[in-house]
Amino acid sequence: MSNLIRRLRRTDEALGGLFDHAFAPAHNPWRHLGGLAFLSLALSVLSGIIAYALYDTSVSGAYDSGVRLQNAPFLLGRLLRGMHRYTADAFMLLSVLHLVREAARGHFLGVRWFSWISGVPLLILLWIAGISGFWLLWDTRALYSINATAEWLQALPLFPDQLVRNFLTIDALNDRFFSLIVFIHIGVPLFLLAGVWIHVQRMSGVRIWPPRALTWASVGMFSILALLLPVESLGRADTGHVPNTLSLDWFYLFVHPLVDALSANMVWLLVGAASIFLMLMPWLPLQALQKRPGANNAPAQVDLANCNGCSRCAADCPFGALIMVPRTDALHHPRQASVITDLCAACGICVGACPSSTPFRSMEDLVSGIELPDAPVAALRRELQSKIAALSGPQKVVLFTCRQADDWSQLANASTAVMPLECAAMLPPSFTEYAVRLGADGVVITGCRASDCEFRLGDRWLQERFSGEREPRLRAAAPRERIAVVWAGSDQARLEATLSSLRQRLAQDPSTITPHD
Image 1 (cartoon, rainbow, N blue to C red):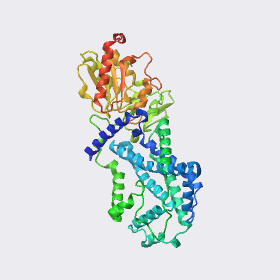
Image 2: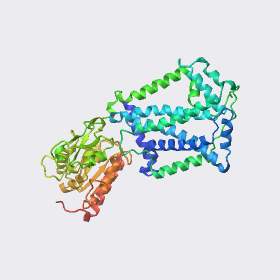
Image 3: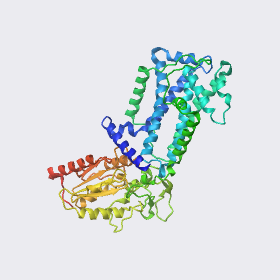
Image 4: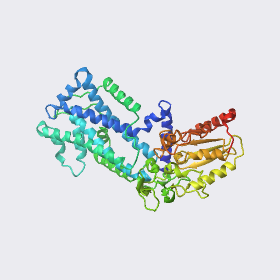
């Protein structure tokens, strides 16, 4: 199982890389599956509210109201029905892809367990909301689906044997039946919205919506699809006859052919086993995925003697593991940082945000206001000093790497010092200046693919710190011509190309090389 998920993770990065050729990394839809799914849900709910205002919730009028909407002037009904149907299908597809991608990246372990188990039930609610929408049309497909669902439910001892007979004659149906379906179709999406809110509670800086350009492109795509491939009702439902052949929506009605091919009991067994397996995944023996070689798992710790209560660490924590609380020591600062250890992913992003993490402090035993116990800033400074002192080749370069992206220790040589970090954003910007001060000619920082940080926000925070948009900033006087940032992920060729390009630039333009202090 572990090897399979590792291969899936590599495949995921390869797919993301392919999409990067067609989209800007920040707008890569493969990296915004969750946001696109939520956008689809919002569009489906909005179009559904409008459609409901035009819908007749009665046995006799349901089919006709759907046809009237379908034939509305100026193609508005076609647009509305298509938007509602295709966004609902997209919500299902994107949600499943989002689940598979998160599983492939091991995002059901550690601090992410709550988001995982709160997300799994949403798929069931989504399916119920979707399939009940087909029933409201009351065409031949709706009648088939209702009967097939009733037969499937009868396999459970909770439902009576006469359940299917309630839908076989017009006398057994009444307007209350449609009121029940409407209640399900409207009520379940409300639970979905509440479930999404719960799903993201343990994360900060959540990207609920995709980027604006991707949002408008998606709306345009759904609109074009609705107009070119109109959603139409089939023939009127005849309770005395179910057709032998009809078209199905495989996003929601797949269960009916599956029951026919296997059996009702077998499908229930598969659904139950899959649900239990998904819910138990955070506690299965897959910890090798959570901790790569050399990775640190101990939560961050606050050192009050060096914490001034600036709250930068709390603002930058991707998982809401840091909060500001009243001061507990005698220092005059009113607040201090406090770590919620159960939520801490030990990414080190808070260390990179702390103003006391600068290596230029004269303290012999450097201590930051917040530290990773197994990777203190003092040890990082000592390691940097020793590795730069050992360089002897031309164009000496320090390579700061992210352990989550890959292990780049094989790139170390006489001209290259490799400094692994838990996350690229663990690096305080001042360390790049310090490396140059020690004798490095250049610095390269690499991490996960752009907009695809393993810890969600690392690449964004690092870019903003180096561009001067976020504290702690890289000083304006810093030798930016000596610094290169590349979000290479596990792409060794791309990383080596960046290293080579920086060395060539430094070698060809000596004027950019300022004397070492």
